[in-house]
Image (cartoon, rainbow, N blue to C red):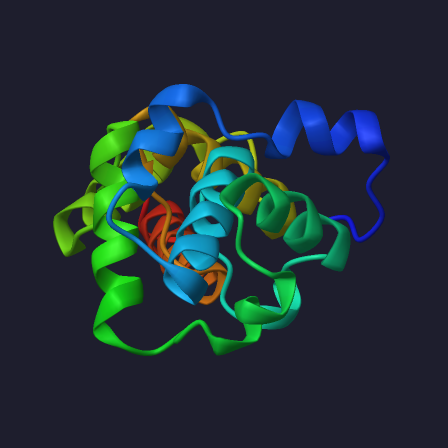
Length: 165
């Protein structure tokens, strides 16, 4: 995520729409601001931030004004507790996404083997392809580490099968 945002970019990408504001109804303080940040971050990146430092300060300030919570409250948001898990689930549901499962990973590996690895084997490019495929299926992509493991496993299988024939 980029660190510097112009005012017009903040307005375009980080402004809550009326239907999104209704999701904030029962949330207060740090939970209200944290939820708003998670929602807009997910819409932009199709993943959730992993750490408080993943969110640029101008974004926090912009959203804090919209939800009427001081930007300092953001530091009080619990990144490990039950609330963030509930918030993530609520955001996924609202946006029509779901978490990736083991069977999704297996299906992705099979798709790579059958459709992609015959003509593309650059890991960095494959990571982008896999993330895009998950997104197109409305599945929240796994972590970058898990995606990398999935790709490397599929590559090993492809190479093993290739040299058997």
